[in-house]
Image (cartoon, rainbow, N blue to C red; front, side, top):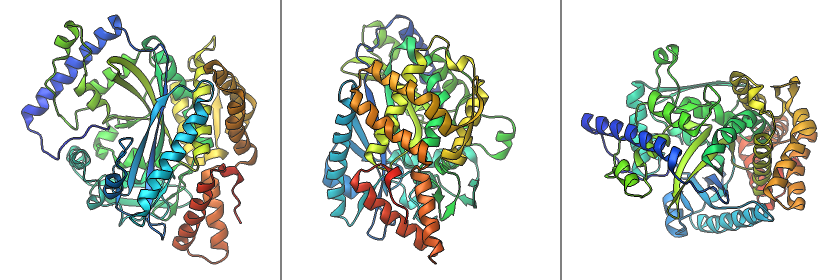
Length: 491
């Protein structure tokens, strides 16, 4: 949700007007899906990477505004916490050498941003959850100064009517209560965008849901939160709980959470936007002047600003996106399941697996989602978040299988086929999918490296806080090499 808003409160009339505008936008969107020409001639991809800023002791440092001011790069923007930044990588095709161009562009962007961060005694770190964070860092005062985050915080707390509780059980158990959504700033993610046509959107979204658990298992990189070892990808549980607008009574009634896997396979992108309007009250009821129907009838392209803003406050793990570029509207699947890091090449390997696999699954004769209950896809997702690369998943015609065996025996060849259909250079295809292969063969991803390193340090007598700081220091050194995480030494 990149829209800048000022910190404000909203009147009853503003909320009623906004609700009417959202519904009007939905009606116009339905008309556009039937009759409008969406840009799908040359489907592009995109990436967003959320980052942490750390000081020389590897603790979070609250200087994102200062770094952004010095950097003066529109591709970087604030994120929820003052120790966060976000890099929006310009979209491109992945055919030919598109993936290596992504890698080079990201490395250069991070290098420049890191150089400016060092002027403020800070450095960039790409990691799902910064292990040295404490509850003292995730407080309201450390939310970014952008008004939208403060407004969102107030609206979520008002909707909930009580403190937000976080209760996560893993190797350790963490239980806290908080007066703000600031703990959610601990979650830094890697997001992939894939532009698709209206006719193909449902298939790509369904395929993304099918493989979400696999993605999380092989890409997990968030085992620690506030000094506790929790899930392999703790970010999933934290995000689901830290922005939950429901008190216990509404949970018991089955009211849907705003961080949502979903509940069914879809037949159109309209299904998802319609669910957003039907199930979720607005959090930021900021209306625009545009009458979308008038714009449409006059031959223009409606912004649908209210519908887009509302969509930005519903945190599906695979989110539908309507956007306009170069005067033409287009649709995207935004894949949000993965953590940032460990290295740029690791993130591009995760991207190669995602882009290739969804393309292959969409073009199969018998769609995989017709053979898999939706609830099983959701169970796979949470099992993978808990156990990471050691997770079992359930798969059609195979039953329960270790995720590493599934990837090695079935999914990597499919991902290679999909990348071939995108026209990806074979050498880059093999290089990036080879990283996924080695993770599965060795049982080593970012999460396992972090846990093994901390255990080794604790075995030598280090306390948990000291071990976490030392581990983050080693992580930062290895990250700068851009060597994939499965090659990093533990000792």
